[in-house]
Length: 371
Image (cartoon, rainbow, N blue to C red; front, side, top):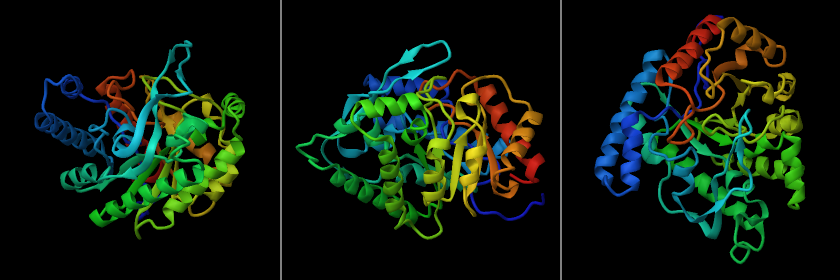
């Protein structure tokens, strides 16, 4: 295909997080232990982000993030910037092919949830000033603040009715998108884990066992995001990344998109979907038949969990397979998720990461003639 002008997303994309360099990992530890002050910590983050931006530009990416280098985890920078939340154990855990289990903490509303300051605005300002290409802002979906505790996501003395909880979250996200728009942000990605998990029959059974209806939750989560997007700034492209969990090569769920496809793809008001398709856990491409015009799909065919480099021929073949359900002109390519949803990162080396990003770019050039 020719090198034609196209709306976001780009043909070659990445999801957001990148492997933290050793100096930054050490700085996180020293800062947490009180051995490094805020100013010195910020300088180390700034330098690491400049290097991450240089990496992205050097491999040919035109979507640029800060690697999420200011966050301890993909969701943490957003969640813990809000007022009213406290840490609690998640009701779901991570696992891998060996059966290893990793437990983690999520959040619970102990008071009315509120936006006390800009959340991603400073991250955006820095990236915008450091690149001539398109900065992308990433943030967790509002479902994150509910799903991993379920009915116990909020103190019921504070929120006797969860409708008020969702109303407060809608206000928070609308305010953040408005602030980003005022700063000139044009590209936002919402990272959605619970909806992807609700494709898994075992997860749905666990949701039922705690007294909730999976199908009703799907409707709630879609409706809340649509309410948020009703007031998004003009000219802002919003995509949604679907993720089954990404922690040091582990995941939380498996299952193709069919159980949510019609309501999600047909009913959600985003411009693009970034979909994990790196393993059999994601199922086939058939659910893409529900993606309406003019929405785009970015195929996460390159694993950010495993070191092995994918074959360009296999990537092209799988893109063609997806093209049976969504026209090639509305497709793009990316890694299936970020490379480091936490400071520790996935079990890949910086060289592995660079090779995978370069593979995404080169494959996009071969398939579409542009990135």
